[in-house]
Image (cartoon, rainbow, N blue to C red):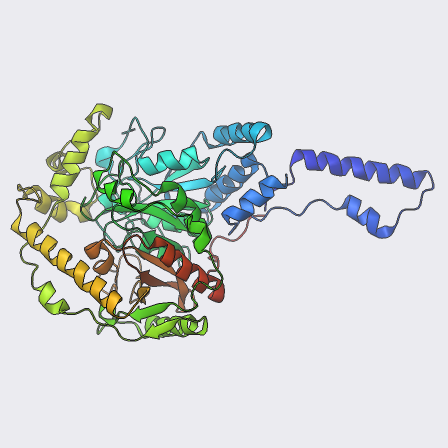
Length: 535
């Protein structure tokens, strides 16, 4: 809860003084009127506040940007390295309050400066920020401060958002399973169960947003890393169509699969951020594909009846395995029942034609990390990053020990992705998968296919032997089609699970419509108990 702004406190004191004078003079005031004059405005509840809540409170004059930022900073101080010690953030922006004061002055003069006016945002530490270090979670990049913002960060600031903090991540985005790096000691904890992982690699952003350390966040997703952490922390996260959102200024893992985008506590919050960041960027050639697809007003998709009449196929091949957790499966079956109750037509199961033969197209290894990472470091050479090659990371010893084998393997790759038979084979498989999945959706007139984001609950921290259950690695990154995850319930009484929906290319509006209708019809999101409201 945030305190009453000074001008309202002064107004309240004046009202009380006037009442006292009137009573002293013998005036009789109705009891209800006296009580109303003495009552202070209700304090703003920061925890779980939506972007609409923030904007409405500012419009009403009951919340300033400074108060909002102070509220989040108090929660970070209480819970990130103290209390439950979520360990989600690498650095907090020391200029956040100064920026908030500037936005308050501009608001007093001109009103809101943009659709994300004073939205405190958590940014994964592989996004370049001109005013804060960018390390991709690695000691090898410690102290590097780029001279520009990543494209998506530029867009957010222009819309009025504040970069409140940079979040921890799986170092160099290597792990989809856990959030541990060399730049920040220890694991990032899942605020729903402090002994559980956040998934990776955007687990720091997910934990911070789930714990209300910021309003929304940015993550990146090569195979899982927006959707997996979002599912593990009862958030909404979207991996967009390849080519709709820019990766310019984001430290790469695999250029051919990397996506960057928003994570939030509600579909509407994610839509608000997505509206700002989507579109062509000359600095990322892949976004030329967006030219043929004008950006719609995604908020038009936020319909309470958004599920009604939708045809949704259950893609069992995406999640059914011997290690499928029975509770996750039960939660997913209830989600399908809820979708049907809300008006969807469920087609269960659906199958991708010739999937097995397509998979046989893949042969040989494809490891583009060294090529893509070193090409990126060359592009940013003017800002003087402390290392230029994978070999320099290895020789420095400044990385988490769990990365050594993968770094050494990457160092041995000398061919470019275009020269690699394994990478060419993978691209042939992907091209075939795109056609086959499109044919399936067209033949059954499907709006989306559905599956659990993970087939198993979040693992215990340090456990890499129990079944993981990551279902995000194949169908969305393999095709470039968009996919969204939305909370679908809990297992073990407290561990979040996510429903994933995948649609045709550039059908983000469809995904937002389905996810919003489902979210509003079920209301599964609840705050984690480890980080309660501050008094």
